[in-house]
View 1 (tube, rainbow, N blue to C red):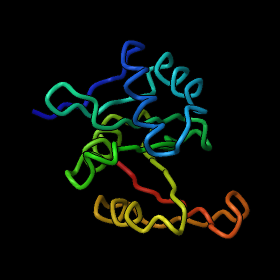
View 2 (cartoon, one colour):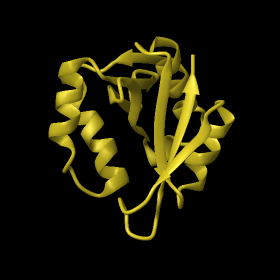
View 3 (cartoon, helix red, strand yellow):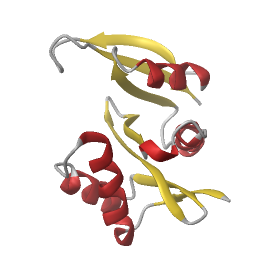
Amino acid sequence: MVNIVEAQLTDLNAIVQIDREVIGNTSRQGFIEDAIKQGHCILVKANNDVAGFSIYDTNFFECTFIALIIVSPAKRRKGYASQMMNHLVRTSPTDKIFSSTNRSNQSMQKVFEANGFVESGIVENLDEGDPEIIYFKSK
């Protein structure tokens, strides 16, 4: 059974472990903890195990911005990113939803496109030589 739920502080270690698997360190632990405390972190649970998480805020020109969509490498290609993305669109406190990914991350670009997001711009100079593509969807 797959569920999308709001993350709790008791989920922090499991979330940080998945993030470490993806980025190789625990440098975002404080950021993740703050998002949980603000109620801005959701989880996808498969059979009660955390398979992935997403963090959002509403500080991007007063629109929802999905800052992270992370799925455990061992649990990818099962639709978990799409499920979290669709949940956040449905429950977004704003009508406009934005997110982004690097130009090099073609698999995430496909996820955005498959879920009805459209390209909305490019930001240079965040990661040298790998521009950030901004994606947009409205409710």
